[in-house]
Image 1 (cartoon, rainbow, N blue to C red):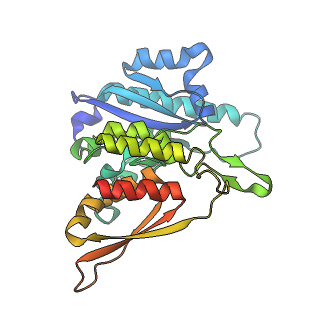
Image 2 (cartoon, rainbow, N blue to C red; image 1 turned 90 degrees about the vertical axis):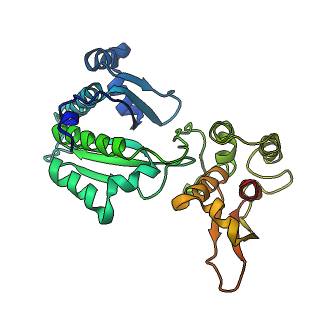
Length: 311
């Protein structure tokens, strides 16, 4: 690792995003916003917290590397203070570690893990922190959660090393950022069944899709039409919880690469945006086409099919 980065001397501006629960955010903000104000002033970093109508919030920290590290240190030590306070009247004997969750573009996670897990193993061993990279992307995004646990000093050293990796391996292609959903999105029914709007991924990300991918007017009209046709995730006259159906289509072999994208980035975007399950059959000897199977609600399938054809 570059010693300049360790000492906070690298003249680079970074933006790091953290995923926090409401209680954690409350601790960071403090009474009348005093805690976060102090963190901003003492670290020199810009600390922004997403809107508060979600159970999860995004905390964005921006600034030079030394300011970023100071802000992380203050957050880690604040969380340790919270843990110590919670144990004052607790029968628990073992102290839980401080835990932070970073939100990292999926395209950078390969570099963070390293060949055969070598890089992440090196970071764990050199810092003493536990680091876990989520296997799946966060809903409706191309980002993954990276969970760091340990003592505050170990977490700070770990964050420094992760920042180095992120600087050395910039994200590839457009990143669709994770945006936590309001708590009212899923509905829990009797018996513990959970239902969510099958089209919510499409509708909620309509503006986001247009921001990241310049679509023709026809695409915009199609997406609006789909959201209007299936306002609650199902078409008029259908059961409110439609059974998943399957649609198959064939694509010429010479176009399949455009749909899959580098390391599967494009097809993953389509899956996230549409909410549909999409499987691409292996190439068959002698065939000039590949079969794609799309499974989901009618709205999911319609949007997935359009996004595939738009490629």
